[in-house]
Image (tube, rainbow, N blue to C red; front, side):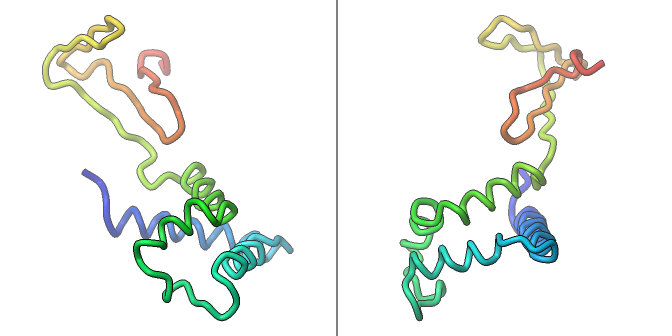
Length: 122
């Protein structure tokens, strides 16, 4: 399993890189995010003061621009860009495809993409 501090650090690094690269080019990503946070929470309220149980709701439902920037960062720079699976024993998929045990047919799964057989890549 790949999860935890390295994937989170990678995602946040790309998020801040993209935000400040845009800022250097005269962009407005940071301004839009700060405005959305201020409008959602109200003036003078720090995000740290939001109850933990409400934080996810604010981030996903009430801050669509911030949510979109995070999702776009993960789409462009996934923390785990390839998730390769191999079968330890021969198996048959629901569509009838036979998956051999020798790993000669692996599936590459990227975020937001459908499975692509390695055979179609050759």
